[in-house]
Each structure stands twice: as structure tokens, then as C-alpha cells.
Image (tube, rainbow, N blue to C red; front, side, top):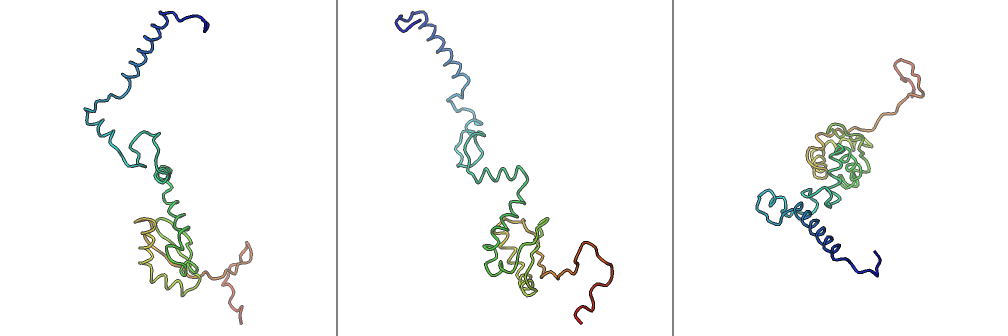
Length: 173
């Protein structure tokens, strides 16, 4: 059929019938406009942005999606550790952060290393307020206890092999 030839009335009628059937199929497979059932009414209620109430393809807030991803992967503790290390200065303050560093964090126990025994003693006295600040920053029950260690004594080991004995005694005399 070329553009010069007129349309046959039979083909127009068959096209119209096909379009009507397609419309009726689409209409019957879609959601009806009446909201009589309570389950549909509760499904179609408006939810605030960022919630996972709708389809999986609906947009969500980035923070919500990231939190769900971390929870799904089981990385909540790792993310909290990274947050503590990154925000350590804001949590404890500049003066304390200069002299006290996070050494490790395992099973809810935070281990801190101080530059001097004086700083270690001060932080031990402030453990309760430190726990409150960490809980406020990272959430409750993330850190259960704090252990503060002083400066580490120097190691006298010089190589991979060690001679057993009492160690250096009369070194400074």
C-alpha cells in the first residue's frame, strides 16, 4: 500500500477493533480506580520521601539507601568505627584528640592510647563523659566500655631472634 492509495474501510475497522481490544486488556490488568478494599487504601497512602513503602524502583533518600545497604551487608560496626575515627576530634575536642588516639575497637570495647601517663589518667577520670559523647555521636550501645592505655614502653628486641634471659639489666650503669 502506498501513500497515494486511499485506506480501505475494512482495514480501518480492524485497526479500530484491535486498538479497542488492546485498551480493554490494559484496563482490566491495571489497578481499578475504586478504593473499596482497606488493603489497597493502606497501600496507596502517602509516605514521607525516603521511606521504602512503594515499589523497589521508587526513589529514596541517599542516607536511607546507604543505611539499608550497610545493614544488609552487615557493615554497621565497621561504619561506626570509621565514623568514630573520622569524627574523633569533634567528639572529644581538639586538646584531647592531640594526645589520645583510638587504638582499637572490638566487641563494644574502645581501647585508647594516650601520649603520656598524665593524659591517660585524665581520660580515665573522664570515661563516663567520654562514653556519653560517643553514644550521642554514634548511637546507644555502640561502645560499652573504654580502656585507656598509657604510652608503650620501648622494645629492646633488635631482630627476629631473641635470646631468652632476664633482659637488659645493667645497661645504664
